[in-house]
Image 1 (cartoon, rainbow, N blue to C red):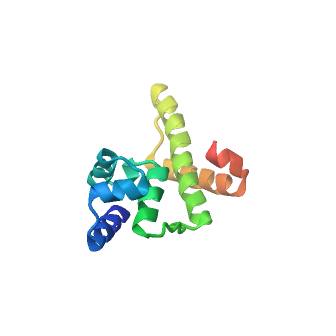
Image 2 (image 1 turned 30 degrees about the horizontal axis):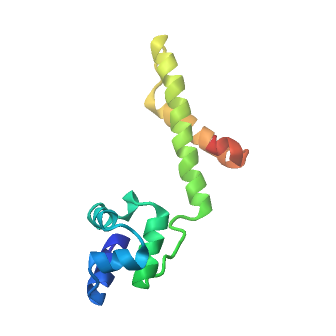
Length: 123
């Protein structure tokens, strides 16, 4: 169950209309209906927090991916972008690179990015 469904289930359990929720949360009815239809990911945090508080629901922030894994994912993404740029340039010069060489370059870049400056990883 996603967070939008959790909020709507709670609203229904409480027997709270959109009008009552609007009054308690100070979020306009039209905005409430849009949020419950499209999902909380399309709403401002302030509105979601106000709705959750009005329904007595805690908002919990949990790490979904540990920091090392997230940095590793970013390093792979950045390495593939950099190698792709190099590959595009080589292709224009008719010096295409074989796939196994590309994977080796990506692997080396990932290692360099992970061991180097964290600022460069996110830049």
